[in-house]
Amino acid sequence: MLTIINLLLFGALFVAPSDGSALAETLPGAKTSAGARLALTKAPSFPGRIEVTANRSSVMLYLPLVPGAKDYRVFSAEHGVVSKIVGDTEDIIGASITCAGLRQRNDCDDTEAVKAYGDAEIISAAHCRDDVRSINWPKTVARQVEVNGLVGPSDLIIEAIDRLCPFVGALGKTHAEVRIAGAQTPLTTTFAGRLLTFPVFRPTFPIRTEAEVRSDFGSLIINGHGPAPRPADPRQGPYLNVAQPAPRDPPVVLNRAFIRASPLRTSRRPVGYKDSDIFDDFSDSSDHFVLQAKRKHVEGVILPAGLGNVTGAVHFANANWNQYAFNYDLSQVYIDRGQLNMLIADSGQDVMASNVIYPKRVLQIPSTRDAFLHITFETQANATQRRYWWLHLCGSDRPGQTYAGTTFSGTSTVLAAPFFMDPASGSPISMAGWNCLQFVPRAGSFEVLPGGERQNSTLGGSRSQGSMRILVNRPTPAGQEARKDTNSVQILDPAQVPGDQQHVNGQWLRSWDDRHRLNGSIFDDELYVAQRTKFDIYINRARIVMFINGKQKICDNLKKAQISMAEAAVGLGQVFYHSSAERTELMGPMWVKTGQHYYLHNTPFVDVRSFDNIGMRESVALPPSFKPGPCYDAP
Picture 1 (cartoon, rainbow, N blue to C red):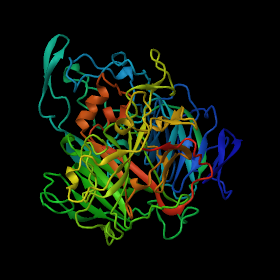
Picture 2: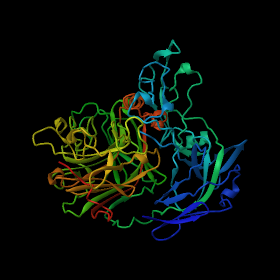
Picture 3: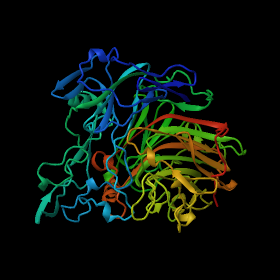
Picture 4: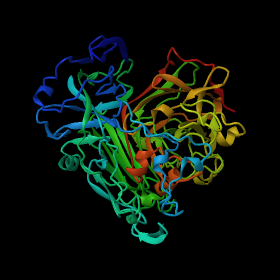
């Protein structure tokens, strides 16, 4: 836990952990010792204070608004870092540069509209006026930067710059070229009154290594959002360079600050964690995931026989976790810079892919009213209807039957299949037909609701831009095959859109007060590409409570029989599916979500996500700030 001391020191906020030791300080009137060795362009200091909060191996910087800034970047001027100044531009070489990027929106940005190439949905992006429920959101630069991989006091240089940091390609552990399905088939459409034929995309997109990025850009650039430019010749179409790296583009620096910041460090477990509790801050990058089993065209391995062509089913493990991946063209899971990194590309851009990790023991869900299983983690909250983080708990009703040793018994694994969260047709995710509890974040509401950061000028209110569905899968009845059980899903959340049916459409779209009046967003203000959000979830057999960044957002009261599992295998990871359909949905006129700039231009066919500080504790109490009034009584 951090205690933020409201003490302004030369334009930066002094921040300290609960033990009172300093985390960050400005260095007024001078550069850091490392910065003094580095030639930099002239730039004034920031116009307001910089707030700094520390995590175990990272710090989050909250930056003041700089007029005209198109991005912010942070780097450490450690030994070996040099600069190249050409005119007013400043190119930093040999550093690890973390950028703020753009806030993402599950709503419209009219500057993304494309109407010049006919009505083919693959190449047409709607105007905001095509969707009466939408709000036109101009591109907004994020003003928080999360710097990862810190091991001690670090001198950081923070710069406001005049352009977006370039997108360097999706960053992975090893290089790969991923095929874009259908890219070899040219599109014939109209442009300027004439028929044109051209390929919409290039045949593949790359997964880049750190070494490749440093070679091409001089430094490792993390969270660069500036996309590869459109072709100069419009007859090549607007999206030929989608998912490709942008060119090197040194910026002009508008403002600059120097701070010294320290992480909390990873030498001790967080307060309250016993040695028997599960906690991983991913500080050991040598703890590699090693292949345990692979199903490819082999029936009855990892998954039951008879499931058909489930592509790329694999099981990896490291010292603390089992990892499963399904239905992918590419899957990479690795530890680097104090975080767990996950990449997944759905097979052929047309199936439901997943990457999930599980601890090597099951956990107990308490039955007593005041004791809870506490699950905490940090990940990117940004979600669409087809890509998101995914948490689930599944287990046998009989003790000792969920795991055989340190992983699932035989083929009793968990698979996200189409409509897995849909009560109308969703089948169990557990191949053994066990009771499961799931948390599924998605893109928010189609309809307009009261509240929101901005108001729709015609209808009032706004769409929710983030949502959470909590559901249970009942155990499959005896004698019935699990994957044919289409009555498995039961939603636990309220229906917050007037006219919606709870058992069909229930989901948390807004937080609400003691009288169940909508009063705030779930995570609309946390739609970032790289910056992580902290989730704390408390579960027992009578209640589920979710805190987001320390604030209570969701509470469902349960009937006792809804969680029947005797023990729980806890899975956490990512789901990404039908990415080609996601892209056309983001651009389509029914529900325009062209505010998802990064997914539109940079990673339309791969989901890149990180996790950190994953913890699981049994028999803990709710936080003192918990309020039962906003809880919903699930039917």
